[in-house]
Length: 164
Image 1 (tube, helix red, strand yellow):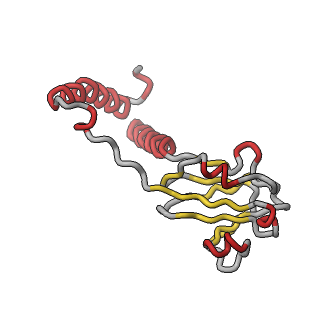
Image 2 (cartoon, helix red, strand yellow):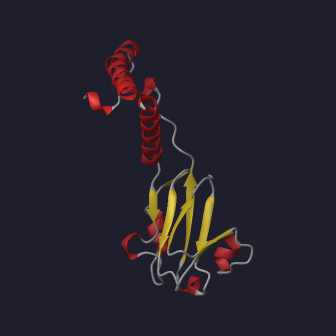
Image 3 (cartoon, helix red, strand yellow):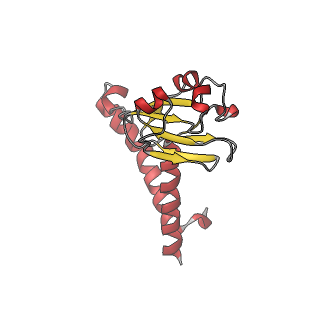
């Protein structure tokens, strides 16, 4: 039973870590996916990284979302679309470094229901040399915090939360 609980705890921690690194960008923020909103302005105020989500919130029977190429975006056409959604709460994983194009496919694209987002690669983690010019100081700092963290996390996995 303890092993099963430990495995569940490890899985839960991994899910939390992966979820904590991704951002869900809700198109239009509190105004959602509706005509008459400047989605270019909204997108320009966001930074999208590989692994983030873009989500569209709208009236299910009124609107939809199509992922298209630049020509489809510029001309408001769904021909050659690479994806389409119509649930009213669509979560789309941005898993490539590229520009994505989304439009509403029921004619509302001509009323501004289109958005283009540029997805960047994940930034590299900072190196230890950038944080400290004294390597001994950096190593000591890592040891001071790293070892207790390792011991605590190992104890939590081994014994579970009940011993705290």
